[in-house]
Image (cartoon, rainbow, N blue to C red; front, side):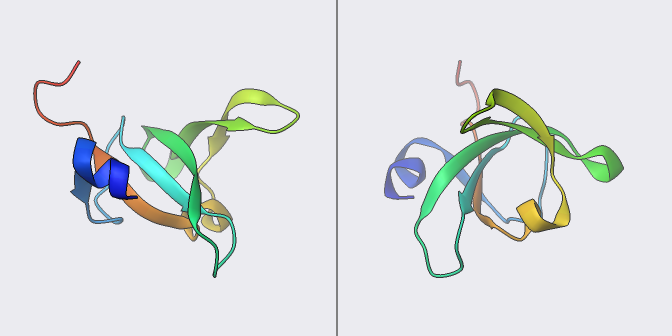
Length: 80
């Protein structure tokens, strides 16, 4: 998360918006090492990520995934 803290804008995990960068912890005691990009919010919330054996896919941001979010970031204003 240190690199993300330097390059991106940290947000509260509950402050969801499309294009947010999500960092996931795959185990409760593990380090955050999975990344996704939020595509939708609300009832159809989803995110794009690379998934072993499936490639790059869009998945629903279901409760099991949402519980794994360790941090949420946005791109700085004016970033390309």
